[in-house]
Length: 69
Image: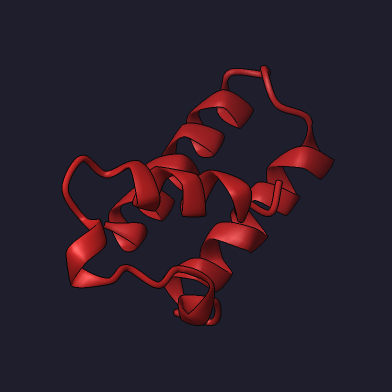
């Protein structure tokens, strides 16, 4: 789930940058953070225990709180 979310956010940043809605500095920060997540450098920040997976609340909270940008 984390990898899929990071891929989606990176694609959205690329589209918004290409459309002129995201400046170069913010775009660079977003892409760098997503690349780090995709390289699995922050896996320890996203623990998902089997008994906490029901509605996705824990996943969403972890991702949003550690969204880096």
